[in-house]
Image 1 (spheres, rainbow, N blue to C red):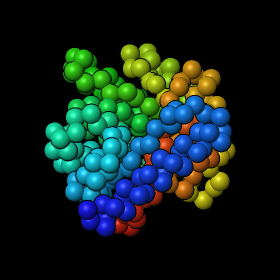
Image 2 (cartoon, protein in one colour):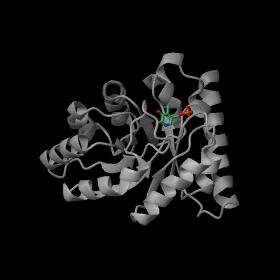
Image 3 (cartoon, helix red, strand yellow):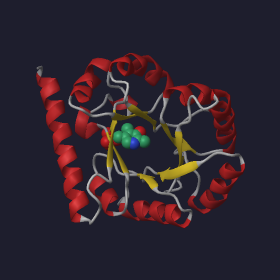
Image 4 (cartoon, helix red, strand yellow):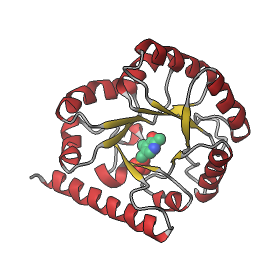
Length: 230
Ligand SMILES: *Cc1c(COP(=O)(O)O)cnc(C)c1O
């Protein structure tokens, strides 16, 4: 096995151990937190060792990139669960519904409507689970609904026949993340939502403390990405 593959195996084992430890530390049920391995910019041959090590849940940021990488890998590992975690353009809704098992970045009514349409067209063959992204830091450059709009947005999604199972956030890079995780958990609780995607390489422990069901970890598994693709 190559050094890169060995490192990746070691990183994965360490992250899984850290997740188990956090579950125990914070009174979370064992196995209640899922690791989403964020493989954006990693080529299929770089992802393969993670699949061979048993990792099955992956996150990608770009529809086009996922479309190029995953159909081939999926032929070999049909039980993969793929999460869309990047901004989604409405004109990519169709591809996204076909490719992804979970779409974490529903954040506009126009997108919600397109997704509802494409899911109806797929007629039961494809029905990705959907999360709403909340822009907890209200950063203009980031996607997501404002925290004060979240309840109304969730209601509007339901009115369009779209079932939302949870929330996702990306806290501002220059702030302590915990208040953002706490806010996301609070919005989810008052809307009866069970799935919480929050926490990345640097802060997944805090996210687990505050209720994350999914942590999205890239760098700590696959190493640093090329700068422009961050
Ligand atoms: C890239 C990315 C991650 C992974 O970030 P790391 O710091 O590399 O762990 C998680 N979530 C989203 C939305 C991302 O775009």
